[in-house]
Length: 107
Image 1: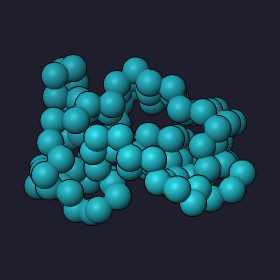
Image 2: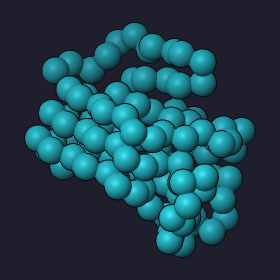
Image 3: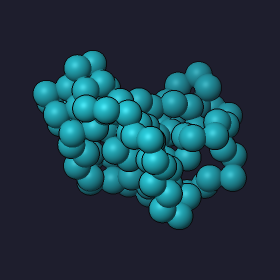
Image 4: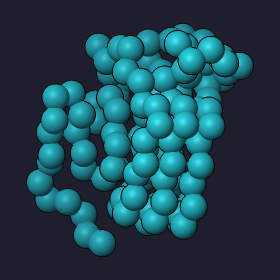
């Protein structure tokens, strides 16, 4: 695998190293709100299957979860890289992604 030299820009998503990169290119991106990444598969990625903000800890209603039910495989890096949601001050102390699976990943 090689680093991508071109950026694939689709709407607000920028894909440079991850298969799915959500609001992570310019951090913190407080203008990126209400984006949900649910029930996707990311495969064959260079750096990470998913790079996305997590949701509040112990948030179990589907309406409040923004990262849930995703799968990453065959990744030469992380299955997922979750980071604190810049639009949620509580996420600096605790954040999570729910029902995530990864296999054949390096980290």
